[in-house]
Length: 91
Image (tube, helix red, strand yellow):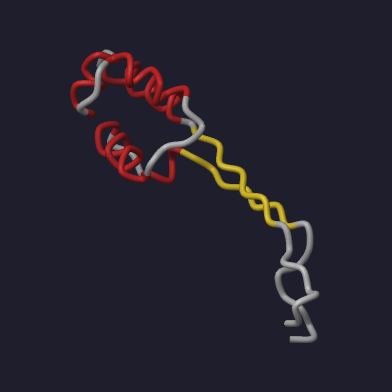
């Protein structure tokens, strides 16, 4: 690859479904958001921020999945949008 070759632009879009999963968990178990916040080790206000967040750490995702008794992959989707191929046939 020469200095003039450009690196392809890759856009990664992550969509979280945490609020939906928490509401489903509440419906199925009767748990309150306050109970979920306590289990998560955060305040109810911080839980609200987490539920509305677009960026979360893996640690938080794993703890939420554990509390909700679901797979962490059920909490988000990933879409990769490549503007051009990352593989160059000349390489």
